[in-house]
Image 1 (tube, helix red, strand yellow):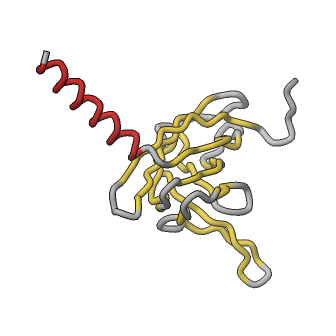
Image 2 (cartoon, rainbow, N blue to C red):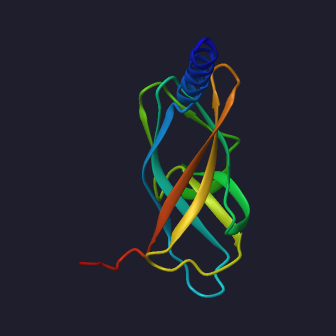
Amino acid sequence: MVHWCRLFALLSLALLSQLSLAQTTVKEPWVRGTVAQQKATGAFMQLTSAQGGKLVAAQSPVAGVVEIHEMAMEGNVMKMRAVPGVDLPPGKVVEFKPGGYHVMLMDLKQQLKDGDTIPVVLVIEGKDGKRETVEVKATVKVPGTTKP
């Protein structure tokens, strides 16, 4: 009986440690659809980190290269550039949207069609330096199309 209690206690601790790592939530993930031969697109979502952290990397099997990008005005010109990470203040929603922060999927291996589901893995670095991976299933959407 003592053996089972010990095993239960160890499993409970393991589960609790996993739950404490899962501190980042993702809402409304989507990827902009592409046309044939298009080699790049963006992924968009809302990220919330309970304890704060930073999005430091992303990857997806549909792209050869995945980077975190920012669109910003420089003078009178809108420019897009890769950034090393995006801060996630504790409890605050950080929106990744067209015209702002986004995850850039480049060197696409296939056309991304409306309604497809694309896996994206996000790497979040906590304030303590520990890294958490968050697996996201993003729906492909083609702007301007409507579905019932």
